[in-house]
Length: 110
Image (spheres, rainbow, N blue to C red):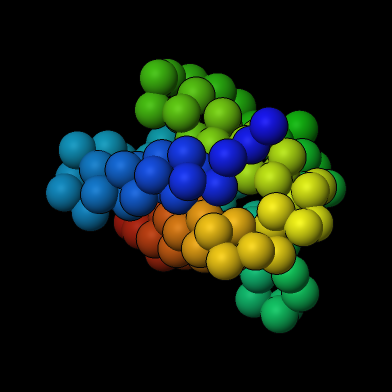
């Protein structure tokens, strides 16, 4: 079960770490975020399939990256559960993940 509150909390924590400079996304992280960001720019909703496709090409490199990849896996699971994803908590969690992806995609390379 992918609990929206856990996804939201993890996304918020990574956003905070990124904003404070405690975590700088690696090039692999940024490539994953940019691919998803470009998809989001089309105006289509994010799907579990889209996340899994990006994860299939991800290159894990450190603990922070693994946290990001786990967050994306959890989000894909949430998106697969339409009633949970469409509820207020689910939408809030997905919005936080999208904010994280935006911040990563728009950040300067390390």
